[in-house]
Image (cartoon, rainbow, N blue to C red):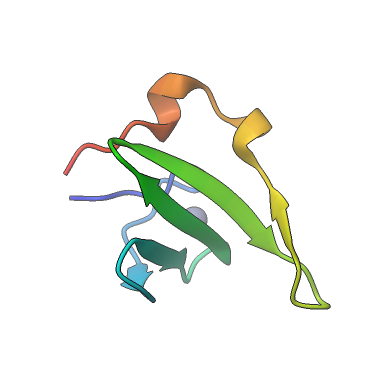
Length: 63
Ligand SMILES: [Zn+2]
């Protein structure tokens, strides 16, 4: 089961082939092999990376 690395929530929606969205904390996640890249969607629709906030371990996907 995939969990949000930010809030640890399970309320994850699939928005694309490799794109997921956390409905709890409103961040977008992209699957890159076995890791997540995490973005925050800004008010103007642009994405800012949150990868720096998480360790490699935290971004590792455990299905
Ligand atoms: Zn979340």
